[in-house]
Length: 113
Image (cartoon, rainbow, N blue to C red; front, side, top):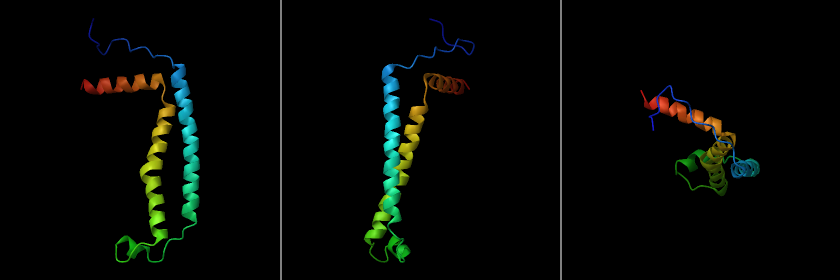
């Protein structure tokens, strides 16, 4: 079998299977559920005023209040988990066989340099 060269025909773009279509649909639903999680995290956060001595709590000078701890947990949940998950799921539902082939072709071209 001949080796692929830059002039070779690109690989065919496979059709989307019913299972893939269903999986992307499920991921869209997860995105909707994630929106609800974000909504309720924001609601909980808005009920917690920033403690006046938050800076001293953050540096460990005084013990944390429950409000300070809860706000911190919500901020971490959003920044470390919700936002990256949202990005990952959006990318997954936007993928197509054609975009995956194009991405593969770009990586192949970079490897030849």
